[in-house]
Every structure is written in structure tokens, then in C-alpha cells.
View 1 (cartoon, rainbow, N blue to C red):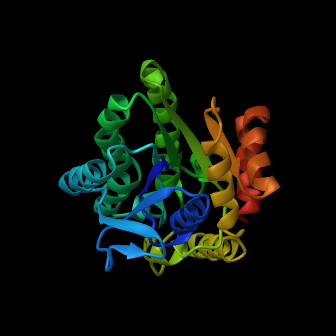
View 2: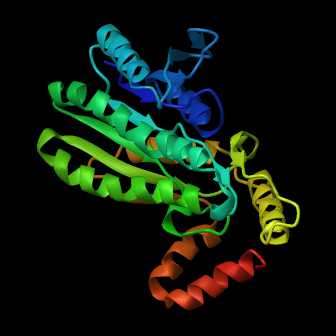
Length: 267
């Protein structure tokens, strides 16, 4: 029987690329979108799901389980970006991104786990970010959401061992997607003490995304990890320097690493 995959945030970007790649490999793919216009798009079976609304999560998971009898893989890809000086970032926006990038993911996992446990197995892949390994200037809140998910996955893995349910993180670097257009930007406030440095950092971040890698690379990595019988805890996908920066953080003294980041962002 074909394996059933549920991918959150599958209507664009990395999620869409993963979905199409897995369909080519013979998987039955369900993708989520808050307001899908069509039930099936290029082979992706869409279900309405908003990760911030528990009732939509439960309804979507129930719908898939009733139709397919199982969910073999869950790929938590839905998320949003946020930039801005932490001091000037509205509290409501901070809460909103945590609801999406962290609490929403936990809610989806909780909804799917009973189905996987009933079927004596499953595999959950959380799409995090290389930014989750370090506190980046003017991206501190985003880094915090992804870092929290990385650590939570570590704990979850140990709790799920008895149920034959696997879990891992895959952390992408910069990929050519529409994330820059969809993320929340704290406004650049004229005469703010952060005005010049925030603007220059924001311009640099947008350039990195524009020059990012093809999302197909992420799709290929996700598929490769799905084939592993004993997956490791953390995977990184991106430019060599992005992945190497994580290794450097474990090697360099904290202040030296901080200076390196500030030099990179011209702060």
C-alpha cells in the first residue's frame, strides 16, 4: 500500500516542492492550507487547516484518517517569518509567530500521534531553520521559535521510542521562496535608535533569500531522510557557510562568535 503523508503549509515554497516530489515517488500526499480553493491541485489532496486553530487541525486529521485509515508521515512545514528589533516588535506579533511556528506544530503532532500509535508506527519531520541554532540580530523572535522546536523534538523522540514513532528536525538555510514577502516586518521607525542598522540588516536578509537555493534540494533531503530506519536528531540543509556557522558556535568562545555574526551583518 502507498504511504500517506500529511504536509502542513503545502500550497507554496518548500512545502509545495516536498509535496510534488513525494507524489512523483508514489506517496499519497495531503497538503494543508488555511483556505484551499480546490480539493486536489497537481496531485496534492488539500485539506483546510490553520495551525493556530485546534478545531481545524482535529477536523483535517480526522478527515484523512477516515479516508486513508492511517497517516504514515507528518511533515510540519507551515510557518511564518518575523523581523525587527525585539524592543520594537509588537507583543501581539510575537505571540502570533509562536502560535504558528511552535504551539501550532505541537497541536498538529498531538492530533496525529494517536493515529500513528494505533498503527504501531510513524515518522514526524519538523522543518525548523538554521536560524534556530543561534540568536540572529533583528530575527531573534524567529530564531527563538525554531530553536524551541529543535529542543522539543529532542525530548519528544525519547518519549515516543516505545511506540515505534520516529521524529527528527530538518533545518534549512536560505531557499528561494516567498517567505520574505509573507513574513511580518516590524516597521522601520524614523529616528529610531535601530533605524539604520535594522534597515541594512533587513536588506541583507532579503538578498540572501533572493539568492537562495532551489527548494527542490530540500525536497530531495526530506525524501532521503524518510527512507532512514534510524534517523538522527538534527539535519541541516543549505550553503556550506551556513551549516559551518553552527559548528563554529560549538567551537568558538561566545564573544568571538558574537563578533563574527556582527561583522557578517555589518553591525
